[in-house]
Amino acid sequence: MKPPLLLIGHGTHDETGVAEFGRFVHRLRCRLDGLPAEVSGGFITNARPPLGDSISSLVARGHHHLIAVPLSLTGDRRALGDIPGTMALEQERHPTLEYDLGRPLGPDPRVLKLLAERLADARAEMPRFVTDEPPAEIAPGETAVVLVGHGSTDPAVNAEVHRVSRLFWETHAADLLTVETAYVSHTRPGVPGGLERCRRLGAKRVIVLPYVLFAGGVLERIWAQALAYGANHEGLDIRCAEVIGDCEGLADVVIDRYEEALAGGGQSSAPAARRPSTVLPVTRPFPAGRTPVDPGAERDAGLVTAIAPRLSGARETGGAPLPPSLVDPAPLDLEPLDVDAFEAEAFDETFDAETPEPEADGEIEADSMIGAVGRGEAGEELRGDAPDGPLAQPGIASAV
Image (tube, rainbow, N blue to C red; front, side):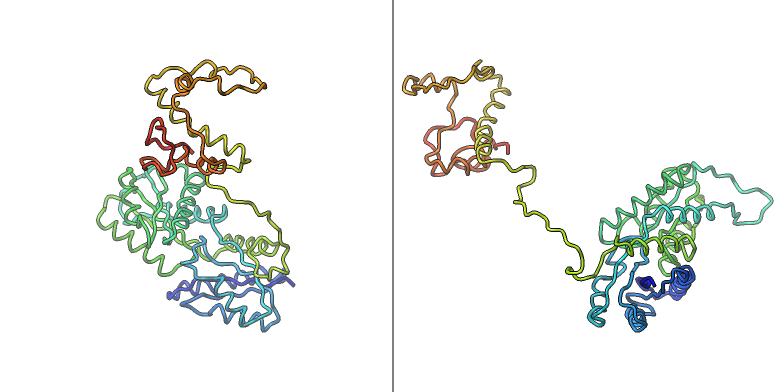
């Protein structure tokens, strides 16, 4: 016998939503009866049955491994509740309990298909008044959709609803003027804001499409905001679609999440000793935009960094070109060079105040990180250990 399916609802004070949740649990019991697998459901808060009572009932019947699927279209933990925390408390009450947590239901192509069905029902011609004149024809290019989500304080969750709007427009409503996104609460735009945007884009008909699973208080708030806006814009045909609701298509998505978690694709609560682990190599972190190099390359990079500002300044001011020996260097002479043979004046003329050598060998690596020996960030005064000779182009930050 397969592990039981535990449906988790966020809870609502509206009896309509609680009743629809119960009907959906019964639908899944009928669907999974042939597997066989038991189905139960509960709410985190604000409604009955509580999630703890459903878990206790399953454990009393001998089930110690559950597949929990949150009935949520997004991964908003603030809206649904702290499922991992709640399940951890239940594991303290039932030490033998283990569970696998399935993914949220959306966005899923089958969920988008269900939204398209609700949109088609709302687009059907339903004249408001019985008159002898036929209703005015409104082309698809003059029809817009406002897809309304719950709204969250988490920007990632709100961005997910935006993604659903775009996917729905391109896959199921490409002939319409636009599909805008709105939210019931917690963020902008609200339902009136979404309707106003559609009106300014030239829509003559706007269909409000709730991105909500079951009827209840959220749906009533969406309709109330839409009707309040329509009362001040009589020339705009505003229609409100139904929620996804208790249906076979939604049951297919939940069963898919159940099978996925059963196959190991969910978040498991099993102890680490019972799960295969992978030992990851420990790597030394490097600053963003840099890659690990050997000490020699690090020292060379510091010298190049010190020279780069002067080359850029010479290029911008039209300075003298580089000596041919630097542009096209000759092959290296491996014989020892007599340094005393060079004259100091010729050396300064060629390299224009070359960066002096550090006093100690160990200082060059530290100073190479800031671009010049004895200097800090741009605009800082010279440190006490700076060389006596002047540096070219003072105050220019090094390029790291």
